[in-house]
Each structure stands twice: as structure tokens, then as C-alpha cells.
Length: 220
Image 1: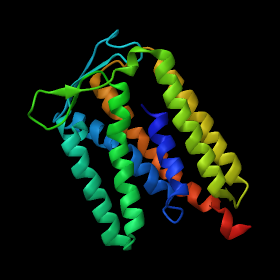
Image 2: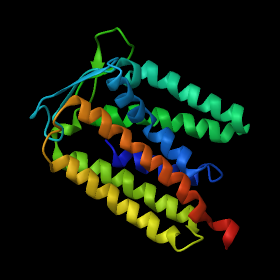
Image 3: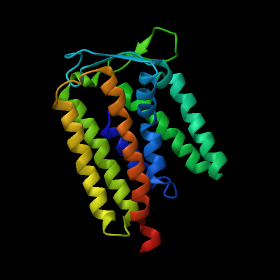
């Protein structure tokens, strides 16, 4: 799940229009930014197992601090709490918290049963849509499309880059997603962890895009 998480961040701009798109995207992919960092620190573990599912060669063996339900709830509360202390907007704080929490819900749909509810307990859950290419693509692109529509309904370009930059990034994300989906498996766990850090570029793009597009009701 990647485009779906991005779609959530884009779509939530319609719920919290005063929130920066960069922060919304950060919240929606926060768990997947935390995970490669914990991989680098060897607090969490993944194995490269081609054929593990129809869509990913990765076997998520241990990631309790980033992807267990309890951990995600705590991260969501922390993210929302820090936002509230910084900006005193309870609306935005709740939206950010829900964006972080949505990550686990969407992962639950696609992962095989490898998501823990509580760190240290062996019971794991996952509906396993990654075993179906059509189902996975359907849900990913549906959420992504709805997010794009909601974002475009809420904002409008203020500069030329407000259009070119936005649609260029959408195209880039789709190409990267499909390349990752149908390309060869990663060469090493270290490569996974380092490539995962590249998602910070998406957050930076979101903050930049905030300067290129404005709310429609402010600029009509």
C-alpha cells in the first residue's frame, strides 16, 4: 500500500483545508517513514522472499514498533498532540491523528497476517489482498483517485507550477509505484531501508505544493 496512503493525505485536505499538504502527507505515510529508520537501526526486520505474495517479495517478520496496532495508535496520538501544542487547532490535530491511524487500517486490507495488535503478542492479522493483483490495484488506485479529486476540488493553482508540479508528481508516483510493483526484488534489506527514506521527498513536495496552490474559496 503506497498510492492509497498518499490518496488519504491528498483527500484530507478537503477536511482540514488550513492544514499544510506536507503535514497531511507526512501523517499519512508516517509509519512507512518510521519503518525504514527502524530497519537501519535493526530494531525491526524484514526478509526478501520472492513469491511471498503476488505483489511483494518482502516478508515482514518483525515490526512491532512501527506497525502494531497499539504502536500506531500511540504514534497517532503523539502526532496529533504535537500538532495541537504547536498550532492550537483541535480539528487539524484530529485529522492528523486519523491520517496516521488510517495507515494501519489500509495495511490491514493488503498485508497477509503479519500485523501485530500488541508488541510481544504472537497473534497477527491481515486480509491478504496482496495475493490478488487486481484487488490490490483496484483499491490502491481507487483511494488515490478519490484523494486527487478531493484535493483538486479544494484547491486551485496559484502559479504555473501549481498545475505542472502537481500533475508531474502524480505521474511520477504512479510510474514509481508500477516500477516497484513489477520490477525485480530489492537487492538487500539495506537497499529497502535507504530507498524508504526517499519518501521524505514526497513530504517536501507537499510543503512546496502548498505555496503553488491555494484554497478555491479564497481565490475565487
